[in-house]
Image (cartoon, rainbow, N blue to C red; front, side):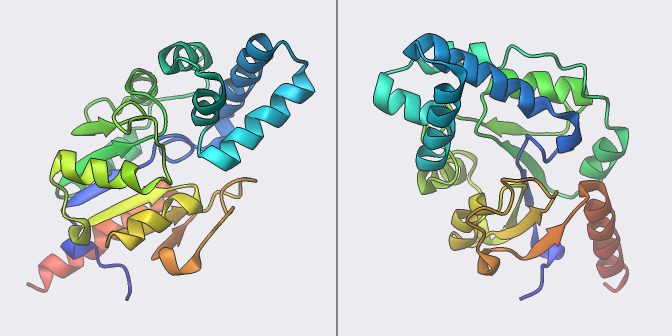
Amino acid sequence: MPFDPTIVDCWIFDLDNTLYPPSTRLFDQIDQRMGQFIQELLGCDGQEARRVQKLYFHDHGTTLSGLMHYHATDPHEFLGFVHDIDMAPLAAAPRLADRLARLPGRKILFTNGDDAYAAKVLAALDLAGSFEAVWDIHAMAYRPKPEPSAYTGMIEAFAIHPDTAVFVEDMARNLSPAKALGMQTVWLDLGTDWGDRAKDDGAIDVIADDIVAWLDHTIASLAEAASLG
């Protein structure tokens, strides 16, 4: 069934590499900080730290989840360390803010990061007022996307009706649980190395490569539907 924006009353967005482009290389800073944290924790070199980091990411959804599972890492300590980065690569996104404001219904941010980091990113993008709420890694009880409980917990917390919600995300694997729950889905295919891993074509309703262009098309479709009564 084709994507139908006219039934959507809740717009759910990922944060990193979704609300800003990968070209900012913001996550490269986080990646480097994760490696440094692991080196200090395990007393290993950079090569081993990277191996551990990526193993935990692929096997547990986030590096943090693996560190908590195997090393009893304190999540607040880890997140505070890895998110202590320079936000200068980000710039205000007035076009995105305008399009988000024109969407009818609720807007929720759904991120495997934490709320403190999300607040810094949103402030740098001048999007602090664009979202009703943030569902973060603490709220997920450290069971991140694509763990199904991350989605069901959000649905219950915000009384979301999945059949009238859409989820927009740059990592294809994170769309499958949303689709299984009845949400419509949008994959932002930005050509990253990780974006198409574990992609299930059946779990994707729309593929876009520019979030503002997709929002323009969606807003135009809503206006056309309204004009037809």
